[in-house]
Image 1 (tube, rainbow, N blue to C red):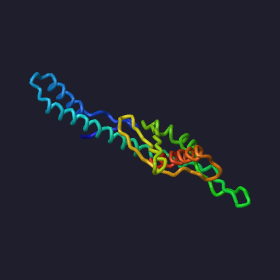
Image 2 (tube, one colour):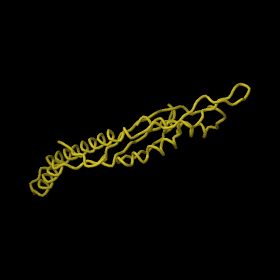
Image 3 (cartoon, rainbow, N blue to C red):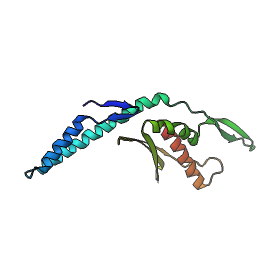
Image 4 (tube, helix red, strand yellow):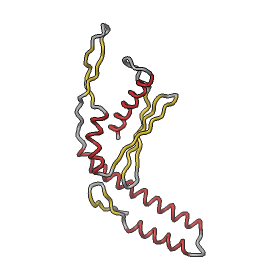
Length: 173
């Protein structure tokens, strides 16, 4: 089955999918319809649609990647000496900076991202879900301990880990 790229990240539905749907419609209208056969046909249709969505996802991802630039590392990582003097240990790109740069590019190619956060015995798990408008999605997860560095309270420690996790998961996707 061959898909045709129409525009950036868009894939035309092929006649094979429509032909299979026509067969399913004909079988469904037959009063002697074998329900087992109908179920197998519907499962086949779902697999065809899922494969087309995956191919559209992959084509859009390949087209999008060259447009994603390196993100400027503007936020300073600060540390403190034993005497309490503040110093810089480096820089990083914030989640907000990364999102501001990649969101319009992702949108152009039909992508969106969402996050799920779960707190369990092993730590805080941040899962990023990269979705494509054709229906395919992929997930990446990271489990982190609560970030108790500095003078954070327990809630701030969790928030810091969630932000860190989102940043790294988004970059990994």
